[in-house]
Image (cartoon, rainbow, N blue to C red; front, side, top):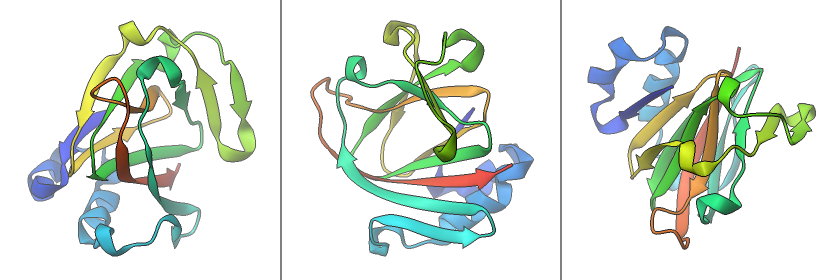
Length: 153
């Protein structure tokens, strides 16, 4: 797991996982406010989702992990908290959707390491990283626009 800010992407680049460096460069090149919501193909098996949605209390959100993709998530507008736990501490899989490369867990949210995501903050999650996304920083919820790059490994 790695957290950085796209406003200083050139400073971040030497320190991100090498497999993600070209994708951080690409993320910095997009005019994300202009992209419509939905799926955007990035070539080959890689793609990017632009989501416009709502955050919710952490207790209402499950943790997820992937096996075939690395996520690069970045807030465009709004704020969210993402809870992080290593997959080995996330407990048993409660739901799996292999066709979407998504495995869901429900570990105690109180054990999460909290990542506060504001506009420009990006987080990289590998298959070893459980992440509880779209958690409301204020505990109640709010509008958010974010991008999730899905990098096939």
